[in-house]
Every structure is written in C-alpha cells, then in structure tokens.
Length: 288
Ligand SMILES: [Zn+2]
Ligand SMILES: [Zn+2]
Image (tube, rainbow, N blue to C red; front, side):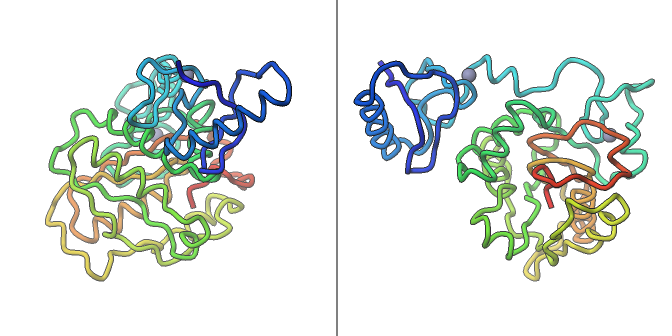
C-alpha cells in the first residue's frame, strides 16, 4: 500500500497536487516525517507527477505519470505546422504557419511533445525553476517518442547555455533532456559540440527585431568540435518560442558541416502572430 503524501521534501521533490489530508497535527507531522524518509529513498516522487495518483507499479523505476496525465501532455487533434509543430489552421497541410513564413527556419522540422500550457508547462517550469531536474527524464522520454521516421544516425545535440547562466541554475535543462532522448532512442550524444558566447540576458523583454540581433552569432562550434561531414543532427531544447534561438544554433551546426537538422523540444508555445512583433512580456517561458 503506497503511502499518502503531503508537503515538501528536503531531498528536492515536492507534492503540490490534490489529496488534502484530514486529521490532526500528529498526522501531519507523521506524513511530513514519512515524506522526508521517502525522499531519501526515492530520487523522484513515487506517484503520478501530474495528479498525485498512485501508480500501478509502485515504486516506479523512473519518474512517471499516470496514463490520464500522459494523454494531457500531448497535442490535441487538429492541423499543425510541419516546421514548428504548433497548432495552426492551414489551407494546405504542407504549407508553413505564418510564424515560420516570417522566420524561414533552417531546420527540416521541429517536433514537440505538446503545446506549452497546462500540465506540460507546469512540468517544464518545475524542471527548470523548482530544482526538480529529474523531470527531464520524463519529458525526454516523451520527446523521444515524437521522433518517428527521423534518421537513426542522427547526433543528439543540446542547445548550450552560457556559463554565467549555468552557474546560476546549476544545470542546463537542454542537456538533461538530450541525455534522456539519446538514452531512450539509442542515439549518440554530443553535449559539448556548441558553445554559447553571449548570455542573452534581457531577451525576454526584447521585441522581434531585438531578438534577431540578440541571437545573431550567439552560438559557435566548440574549439574541439570535429566537422560533422553531413551527419544529421537532432537539436534539443526545452521550449520553442519565436524559433530564433533554435535557428541560431542550427546555423552554427550547419557551419560545422551538419546535414539535415531536426529540432526536438518539450513544448512549443501557441502560435500568436500578434506577440511576434510586440515586445515580449517577462518571460518565464523564454528559453534565452
Ligand atoms: Zn496523473
Ligand atoms: Zn510553423
């Protein structure tokens, strides 16, 4: 019988879902003590990360969510742009969305687990900002499931983070996602192929023109990187917003001799033409 849970745990994971607990203070204290002990045993919560429900196989060997929450992560039915995987009304299925027409993406295609909202958005934010990097395993496995038909010889490359940002956060979520993707799909991983030369600070407050300037030349091949000689690349990031970051990284890979570049992200923001030209609001969702 899996235990009830509540509150936060020192070891890193926290349950903020449903299941208010009846009972007095001694029950709350006992639940807190038990969660502390569980957190020492399990590197991730031993229940559904989406709704808190018990999982059929407890404890799970990997971070897991129940089938109902799994279904909430993915795309809803409807047409999507082939280049950015955003839901878009398209007169013809092989035409780009308005955002991709403007951007002219240098990649072959982008695929996302789903749209950046709801449960998927919450999991990404928890991974990045609430010190729960184990969520990258869950998200990375879901991302790998979206790569059907892509070349098996592809090299998995994460979008790099500037060293200053890395020191602040302690980890690059794109690297964690890329590791999970490569492990799940059996691809070769190249974590340090690219370097980031600028931190990109303030990107979230820039408009489209400012963003273009801000990411120009921001990525470069690592000094020790070998030429890719036409090898396809699977470029991994957490969230696709305007696409400028992914495009800049893609161009740096092409300068290294990469063949076809495919973008793989945990989520893509909804298509919002109006915000594409307007100054961005402050930006939790901005990957830069
Ligand atoms: Zn669930
Ligand atoms: Zn598009």
